[in-house]
Image: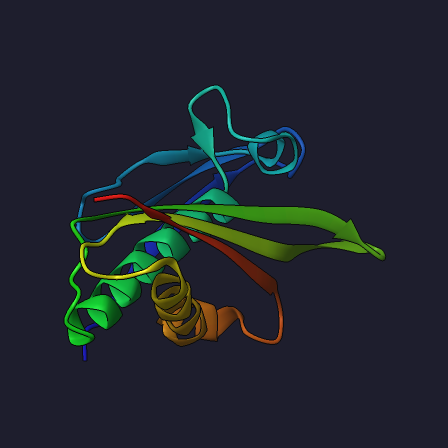
Length: 147
């Protein structure tokens, strides 16, 4: 199986320091990180682990849904997935508490109920959802667009 690698470098203390993250593919080398981007939201060209996790979940879910729809004989023309990852204070620490997925799909030959069922199966079966299962509440809102 494939292995994916990434690395991060952090300099300074948590509140005032900063870091960068990149992957072996070179596609996202040198993304800047900060505590402020993590707790107040992205801005100033800096990202957070939660934004990266949301991107990973949106990508994984879109692949799983596309595959499920194709296996049902109704391949999608287009899927637009948005993931919102919430990082919150829990007790004495912090945690990723929720992941909200929303998907709009243009899928010829399918009705809204079948699209919702396929989206639910993708939410349950995509590898990122499975990795988060039991630790993060995952919700999903599917919407079928007219072709």
